Amino acid sequence: MTVLRLTFGARTWREGLYALLNLPLALAGFVSAFAGLAVSGALLITFVGLPLMALVLLFLRGFGSLERGRARLLLGQRVPPPDPLRTRDGKAGLLAWIGAVLRNNASWRATAYALVHLPWAIVTFTVMAVVWAGGFGALSYPLWFWALDEKPGINVGDEGGGWVWDNPLEVAMVAAVGLLLLVAGGALIRGMAAVDRALVAALLGPSSAAARVWQLEEDRSVVVDTSAADLRRIERDLHDGAQARLVALAMDLGLAKEKLTQDPEAAARMVDEAHGEIKLALQELRDLARGIHPAVLTDRGLGPALSAVATRCTVPVTIDIDLDQRPAPAIEGIAYFTTSELLQNISKHSNAHHAHLEIWRTHHRLMLQITDDGQGGATPTPNSGLAGLAERLTAVDGLLAIDSPHGGPTTITAELPWRDRDGSAGGRPPGGGLGPR
Picture 1 (tube, helix red, strand yellow):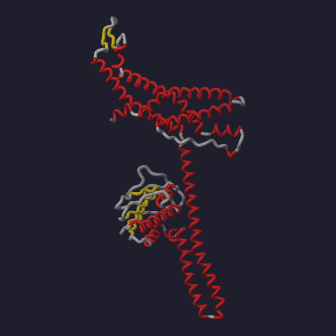
Picture 2 (tube, rainbow, N blue to C red):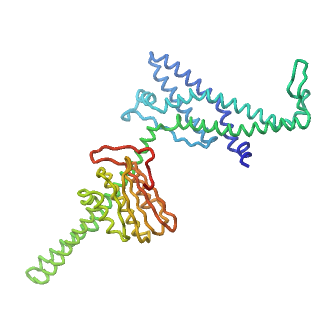
Picture 3 (cartoon, rainbow, N blue to C red):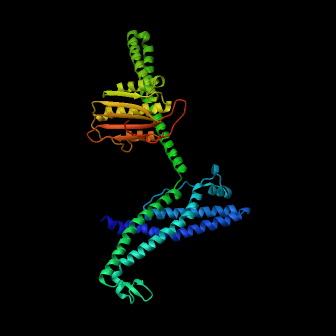
């Protein structure tokens, strides 16, 4: 079945058709690019050179869109479009538009695709012509050989002697050769399609720099959304917690002031109650400040800060921290709040009896791993706490890996970029990454 799929499957037909269409489309693209650049380049000494070159590049961008659509339809290759044209400072006008086209990297990469695709298209068309014409012709030879006045064969010498394919065994051998050619052609088609996919992705998709900019924009939006959510949470906590308590406290003290001369004992009881309310308000403010950035983290580092977090977990937690120096405050804060949220999840959902927290540094990455013996089944479903945590880590070039089979145990590993407190940073090392030490 695999051989039949490779030879006669729908994917083979689509990819073979793509290879056949390569030549006419590549020829049109090559002629457009070569002639357009040659003419517009020669006319650069006149005022029409630059506008003409911009038109040629814009046409080739459209040709690239056509090729991406063909790759999506026949190769199943979904290549995102490149970055759009943008004028500097949002300026309008002909000159701004010409400058945007000429500066755009995608325009020149589409031009490079049109120029380099032709040699490869000649190869793919030739292979397909030989494979399909020869293969299907030989495979169907038993159906039409009898209609020929002169049977094909191999001639030997000038007198016409040789081997003529006309008896049943020889006809079957010709058909077998055709079948073998089609089978080999199926593998060739798959290989040529892989090269075509690579060409389209490399030259007609967004560049690595553009993709990185897009990723940074996405990460920035995640950070902005997270910061806005944190600000709303702080505002809500202040409004519903400490502020409401302080308003009630002010009213109680006002009533106590009025009763001070008429009923000193009642006023004393009210002042005593207000004193208790002040203690509760102070505790709420301390908890709120700890949620923003705990003082123990700033003063003493991750070890003492995480030890304090672990004491608030309803599950016993053992801690193993192996850091020879402190990371940058931002990375330290992210590690702290990541651990705090994971320990809260263990308290609420795991039904575990024990948890183990381990933090270490490997090359230029800060690794954090929490394991518990609970019921497992933790998954980063959309809009869940784990999904939000993964997004926040991704926003700073971090990763979150979750291994939580049903029945447990659960192991969650977070990886953050290491930055020293003086601001120096390192990239992801070869061979470094998620997983236990």
